[in-house]
Structures are given as C-alpha cells and as structure tokens.
Length: 162
Image (cartoon, rainbow, N blue to C red; front, side, top):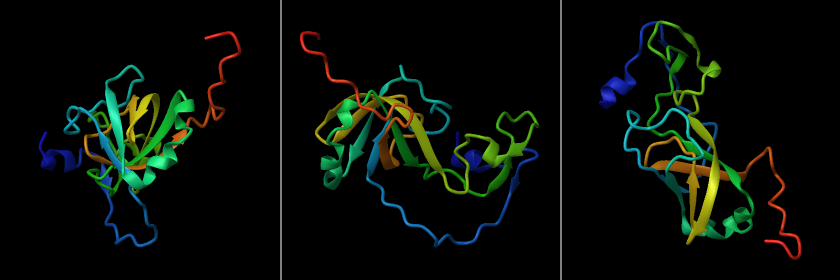
C-alpha cells in the first residue's frame, strides 16, 4: 500500500486543520522491532501467540528493566509516528459506516499513542522480547509498564516445588 493511499480520506470521513502542538514533550526510550514493514502487513490487533518482537531500549534505560522479568504480561506504549492526526470521523471498514475517532482503536488519532498488552518472553541485554504487538518495525517506544490488571509480580515458587 502506498503512503498516498494510507493518507487518503475514505467517504464520510472528516479531517480538521490542526495547529502546531507545543503543549507536551515526550522522550522515546527506544525502538520497537517487528516483522511488519508497513501498515498493509501489520495486524489490526496483536495476539499473545503472535511472533516475537523486540523492545530495543536506549542504554541509559537498561537499569529501569530491573524487576520487570517478574511479570508475565506488560503494557507497551508507543508513538504511531506514521499515522495521520487530523481525522475526527473515520470509516474503518470502508463500508460507509462512520464513527468518531474516539470510538475507535484506530492508529489515526490527535495524539497517536498506541498501547498493547503483551506477553513477556524474556529480557536480554537491554532488549525486551515480547509477543502480542501490532505496530510497524521501527516504531518509537514511549514506555513499558506491568500489566495494570495484574500489578502483583509472579509469586515466588513455594519451598520444595518447581
């Protein structure tokens, strides 16, 4: 799919003219590596049994990973840097049905922050290997958090069990 087609507005969609944003600053903490090179091959929703992907952290953040391996699932927040930001209504299925942007999980948003609840596979040398992502290779990484629904780390094994 060409970039021009990815930016096209479908019937019934509406865009707004946006002024320059100056009210927030974000720090990318790394880059996400996935098998998907473009939106046309990227899944709409990640699957916990999907392919392994890597969260490649900048070296200054490696120590921030201490204790993360205790969790089975983590939440990954990322910046959807190739998404348009100006649509207020969207037709996600191209069937003429139109809804407001805030009623969708579409990557097209005023602030294109993506979130995925993923399965933590392992951590190795400042890289977090996960399954369940749904973003394009090279997507900027914003943050990593333990699963908010299971904030307690995995329980240590009971003595005499494995």
